[in-house]
Image (cartoon, rainbow, N blue to C red; front, side, top):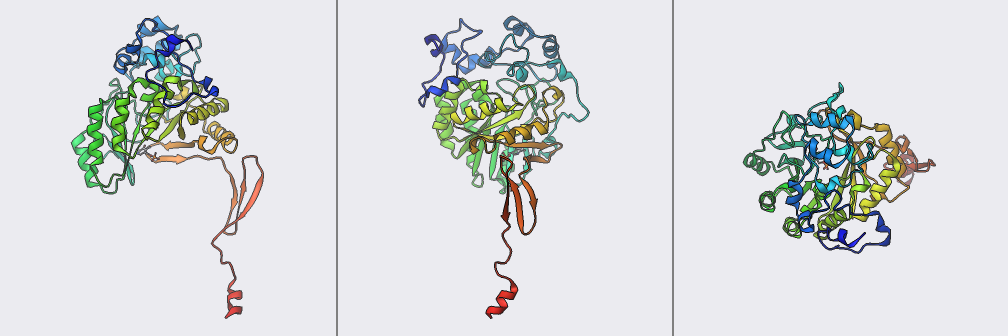
Length: 405
Ligand SMILES: *Cc1c(COP(=O)(O)O)cnc(C)c1O
């Protein structure tokens, strides 16, 4: 790394770089060589200078025919927007680049498979008030904005985010807070959207303090891809504000190891240093992370960033996502190749968010070969078979009890 590149690093490292961390690199300034580091490191500059048009894309990298058609289609579906930071991760001459597949639209988005839906997880039918999804007994999903730093082409909520689709998000904050106050069974609130970290510090603090004022809400988390798309947003001021609202957890979204750059690692480090436990939610995507080597590198890099791989999602049945969908069998195979072979903390739970609103269902390799009242027959990661006696049976028989009477 040369020194001019170092200038693009927003804040000082919060923890030392180990020699093995040569895997973390900065791609700044990349396509923006003339931008001053102060501007590059300003999250508002990053947002203002997002790549949002076909003309701008074509100025920067050669597009394929499929991509050009996809961009033209995106306008009335899900906007195109890519932050300069994230754009620099794209390999210009590789049409199969795992980064570009996530954010550059493709012609295939225009094809809807028979099983694909506009609202694959049935969220709209689980909204007691606009913007609040209450599916599980004790926790709710709170959609606080319809904007993201960049738009993922497989977005499960593309019907309402970015402003390009037919639907709009109409969160009624007063109604939502009234619902939360009344529903004492809700102990967990998950802020999402869109991306809650795109709100100003002030607006976000108003929401956090309002939710923290409700005594039965004990657990608060934010689901966000901002630390990955826009690490510049994770300012020391934001972190200082967030740490007033503990216990506050965060779920971030990294799909490919290349997304973990030095800037992202530092942003994640700042969050952890302010006491925020981090989990990662990856989406299992064809040509992005559906092979063992990529996934192993991803989960190992996440641990170095002090992020615990939490979920690996089978891609939701969102309209126009067939080209990004990998098979459930392949997902299970990858989990099988991780479990036992690497750190337990590195292994996420593979889940399918059941179509129509069934919630997240864990999908696991079968380690239980047989199970009855007396025993369970199991296999380990190497395929060796073991027997374990089932508990709960009387330790001595009724006949033996009689003898001692
Ligand atoms: C994913 C999700 C949650 C949170 O689920 P956890 O398993 O607790 O992470 C809550 N509500 C909805 C509607 C969700 O989709």
